[in-house]
Length: 199
Image (cartoon, rainbow, N blue to C red; front, side, top):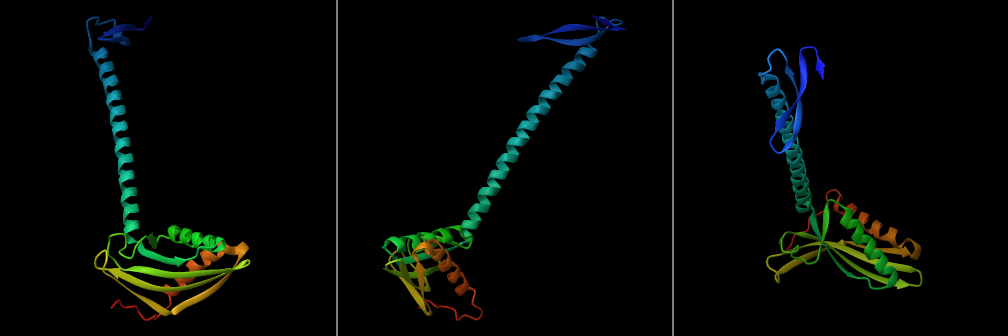
């Protein structure tokens, strides 16, 4: 196939099907045009490789940043220890809803022990007792703080002023748990509230 002074010729490539390149008929032995095509192919491959590498690096950076932010957010959240005696059917719903509200909050994280799960930082505490009568659950709560020096050496203090009693209707048990968490947050934000001091 001819087009003017150029002809489309197959170019042999080791281990690959021949490529097509334009070669000048005025200079049959010239490889300048073919070399140009090879450089273009090579440049395209390098560009694709570099683009893939860059994308992989970007994905890695995003993953590391996200993991770091999540880790810092978890470290910044204060430990919250729940000491409860809520074993009835309705009481369990209230308690479960309260735990869900705490877990959804970026400010707090549930801990299983007063030692802040081994961190030995000061933790907030909620003491909670439930009792049921027909379709009503009475929930008494009080707030405080605690801190451990070792796994077995801990001290805590409760704020007697924070003692509160809530009555929860059976069909509003889940809402009651969320309301209890909001009441706890409200207590922490009371202006000029005397600070609790661990002896």
